[in-house]
Length: 159
Image (cartoon, rainbow, N blue to C red; front, top):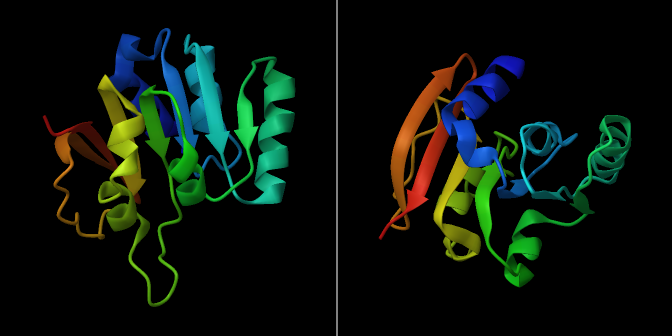
């Protein structure tokens, strides 16, 4: 995870400074907290698991950075999200619920994500390398890199 996180932030470079960040499937908040430590203006963490949301709050307290934690389903959050974000991170579970689409497909084909991304924003999505990239009419993939068991996709909205 540290190698993946380092690669993500190396690729983002100075785009993080002053950015409004949305961390979907935030887990313990590692990506969002790293963004804050690198100069992001604000981070909203979205995590549906109660224990993980509490871990984010503890990690924010330990690191001394501020962020808003929303304990709710990512797709429910997106229904009512307002404002624009400069960077959106998504590190969903790699395995889909049986009988449902994989999260990569659901996220890349969700029409709401491009709407909450700022004009020159970037969507950073982690996925399993073996998972095929679905059709994605809303996105232009600008970079895709594999790091062991993780592939990181950088995307911008289609113009």
